Every structure is written in C-alpha cells, then in structure tokens.
Length: 298
Image (cartoon, rainbow, N blue to C red; front, side):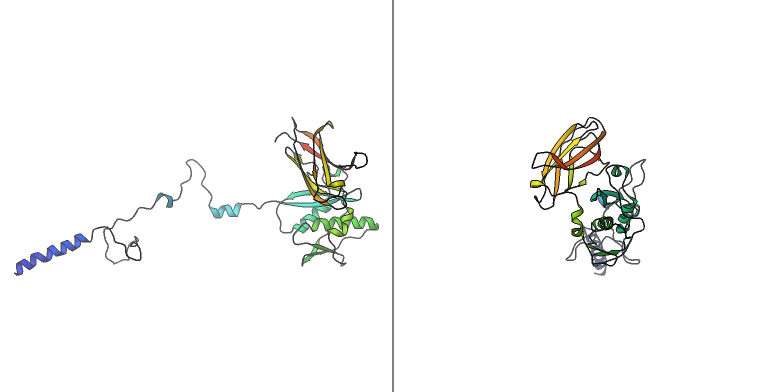
C-alpha cells in the first residue's frame, strides 16, 4: 500500500504543474500584469507581450538631421511680429498707416516711438508728416486710461493735431479706451473725429505690394455711402475699377471693404485712388491716392 501511495503522489504533482502552464486567466480586475515579479518571488514561464510598433519612437529619416524635441521647438520658436496702426497728419487731417515690428510687451511705447520717427519715404511722398516729438511715453495705464504728457505747442491747431495723433494711435489697443493728456479729463477718438477726412484708407498703405484680388478698406462719410475705387498703372492708365458701400450713409461715418480684380503683365508702380462721385456733376471728389507696387498674380 505504501508503495502505491508513493507512486500516486508524484503523478498528482506533475499533473498540477502541467495544469499551470496554460494561458493566464483574467479575473474581475483585468489581466495579470506583465511586469517582472519582485525580487525573490517565484517566476512563471508566461510569455511577455511584445510592445506594439506604434509605441516605439519613430527613428529619424536616414541621412537626415535629427528631429527636434517638442521642448526644443518651444524654446527656439520666435514670437510672431506685431502690426500696429499709426496716425499721421496730412493737410491738417489725420491719416493712418501701419508698421510690422518684432513682438514686444511694451506696445504703447513701440507705437509712440514709431509715431515720433515719422513716415516712410513712400508715405512722406503723399504728404504725411508727424507732429509728435521723440521721448513721449505713457507713464501709466489703469482702468482703460493711458496717462502721458504731450509737449505744448504755441499753435492751438498744431497742439490739437498732435494730441489727436496720440489718442487715435493708443486707443487701437484693447487695454486703452481713453487717454489722459497733461492731467486733463480723459479723451477718446470721438473728441477728434472732426479731424478725419471724408474718406480714410486703412489698406493698402503707401508702398505696399498688391496683386489680385485687391482689397481696399477704410471708413467714409460720403453721398449715399458709395465708395469708388480705381487702379492706375505706371503710365497713369486705368486698369481696374470697383465700388462698395460703407456701413453708414450720408451724414455718418461707416466702414467699407471693396474687392476688385486686377491684372498686370509686369511688376510696376501704380496708384490706388479711392474717391466719392459728386452728386452734383459726377466728378471725382475727396480723392485719396495711395501709391503702390502692382505685381502679377491672382
């Protein structure tokens, strides 16, 4: 009897060992982890799953430079440039233009510096000038009010135009709604709206390179809100025309946007004229001429 028992025990042990070599079972907590067991714990002969190809890092292309990491790209990426609007003076009225400069947190300082620097040669050729001297800076911006001091001028009209340049330039920024000049009551754009010409052109700006489609934008207070546009080539020939309607009719100022086709066989100087058609005799009046560079395309 003892010999039979001795034979049965090894058989049972072998059967138990063979039963444990099948596929791992999953319980309510999910499949068993595949990480190696702690040191000293018994091991099993379960196969370790092979990681999927999607989990593997993508190797750099052969004979090519290594791909920069996301962290390196974030560090080396330059901030986008900033475009600011500047309001100069022409024939006793305010006229706008733009500058694109490297990004800065001191946008008000940048704007006043550019304003004092004066117009570009192309802008100066149209009669633009600046009345703001160098060194004017905002001393404080709080509750939407920018505070600064503007040097006085003996001529009241000149001083008012100088103040208007500052107010219209600074209030383009969302943090500035009004401007306090020399400790006086804060003012805004409405206080100098009478210094705007009947037609203001915000784009294109003098010297800009343009092609089809040509987009002309600005504000106007004209008869029946109709704004007309024509394009002249280097020889003064009319090569394109168009018209649009401002958002407000006669007696009030509204924004306009006119899109016209444009064809030119070669790069050349040109002029964009924005004007009003007289209700009396059909003549072009209140014309704003913007010198541009016409380029093929579109």
